[in-house]
Amino acid sequence: MREPTFLVLAALADGPRHGYGVIREVETISNGRVRLRAGTLYSALDRLAADGLVRRGREEAVAGRLRRYYELTDHGAAALEDQTARLRANAAEADRRLRVRRAGLSGGLDSATGPAGALA
Image (cartoon, rainbow, N blue to C red; front, side):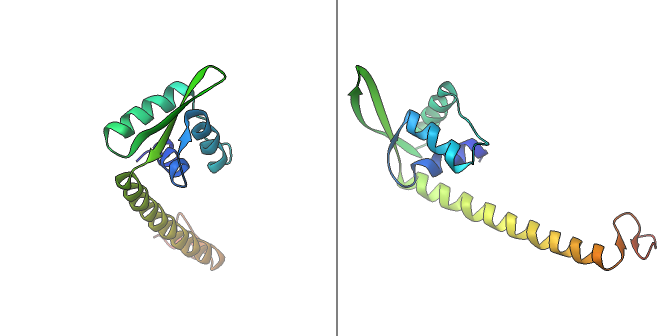
């Protein structure tokens, strides 16, 4: 699952949002790293709806414009949970390997040659 898809699902995890609300929430969740354009978002929402991960909810007219809300389905919530677990496991493994690296570097290891200059 690509990061923007993950973030769209995460933005809908705590309740329905209209398109612009999803765009703002994705930007908030990603600390401004991911900024979705409206066309990109609506294409993603159409694809996610076709996959059964989100569904269109209610619609309302605001200032003469139609505002459509989207919500996470149970299938979407399960996919988000699975992806969250996978990312958490990957991050834990990366952290473990970085700790090993830091311990090795502080113990006189050289990343190119191994311990104390010997060839690895």
